[in-house]
Image (cartoon, rainbow, N blue to C red):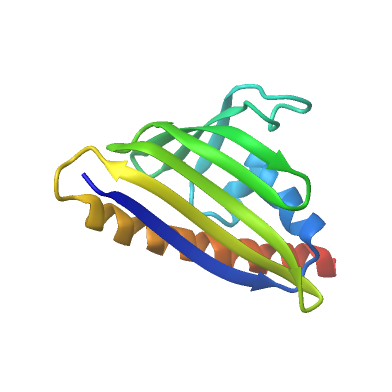
Length: 147
């Protein structure tokens, strides 16, 4: 089965630190990501949302379990899917780059579908999700940065 790649980009008027603060705060995700709720089921370093944290993300009846595997302050959040979707070797990174007085957001992932022939369907669905989440993250961070 072929490895699939997905990418979405957005730009925020907020500085990278403001975008990163929302991104690493699991409790903020329901306000911008399209998820109904996010639960930390294994605390990570620091305040619980840190490196190694395991989150369960709720979206309707779907649940996905993800582990934070990389954090670079104001630059990157990386996570891996542990359960919830019929995908394997799923890794996603959200990269933040200072640009034009704000922040360029690049959300990318790669995975292999466990269901033969379904990789394209998951690529399409994840592209839509990531594009919407990146746009909403950009907007929400800008709103909060304006005060």
